[in-house]
Image (cartoon, rainbow, N blue to C red; front, side, top):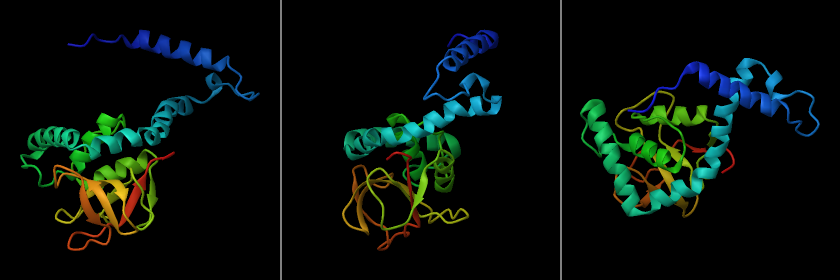
Amino acid sequence: MSPRIDPAVLKQQVDALLKTLADINVGGDEMALGEAPASARAAAVPALDMAADGGAIDKLVALGSNPQSLRAAQAIAAQRLLAFDREVFPHDGCAITLSVLMQQAGIEVSDAFPAIELGQALQRRGWKRIPVGRQQRGDAGSTCGPVAHHETDHIYLVQREVNDDEMVIADNQETSPHFRFASGNGKSPTTFFLRAAGA
């Protein structure tokens, strides 16, 4: 069992850190971090986390491109999916597979099960929508529309683009990277891509 953290001690540590940061004059700016509103200070750490997502893309792509690490992520995803709603992997396993890969790469997303929810979570983290045809390695491709469609929604990781339509991707559907077309070519067409800030 992890030791309990005394909230009072934690508050003292945070206050001390803010005071230290407030003493640093960055670029001659007169407003110190310690003088910022509480809401702005509370948002500072999540903002830093979101900015770091772009720096995790190389590791994310490396995990997805290696069949061994992809299978390991799929095994974890399968366990979580079964515990969540008794669904048997790989059915309905795209979002949780990508969630696990992102977590392993250092992107702090929660477990997501519907594809549309993972896309929404990434956009809250500052990932930007990219139109089909402009995708690149490390983007998350989504077939989702404005509302969930259980049988057609899908989300996946772009490993590399072959051209404006064809890509090599990683997802729950195969145990190694495989080809997919943004236009669908017999599967659900991709509606947009999501890209991390700084990627």
